[in-house]
Image (cartoon, rainbow, N blue to C red):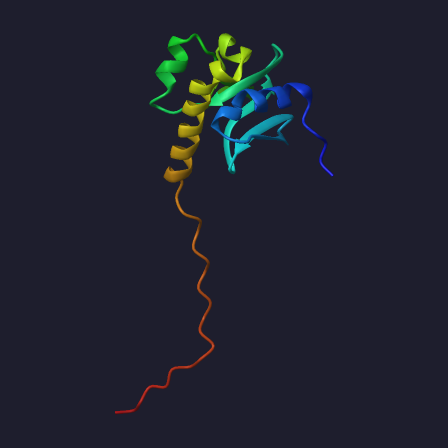
Length: 137
């Protein structure tokens, strides 16, 4: 059985509850927070303590940046990498009401990301087991 989320993960789920029932699951040393199967946030410690990172897209990125939110960036094999997640604004961490508009932005970004994903790969066709007879003419 999976371990229950830590207190901070549960608190973040409560903060994001305005967008729907949230679930925190272990993921890559942190947590993924989702609602209806959509990951709208992650919890990760990039060296300054565990933080809530909200999903962003081209439309919401300027809003996160103008609020002074930090982009999720890390080093991998000596190379700087980033993901479309931004730290939640400090004031939004105080209550579900203050988090609600940010949570909605994250949910919208998650919905757009899911819609833009290409459909799964088609299954390879298996040769038909019935033989077609060709009439000699």
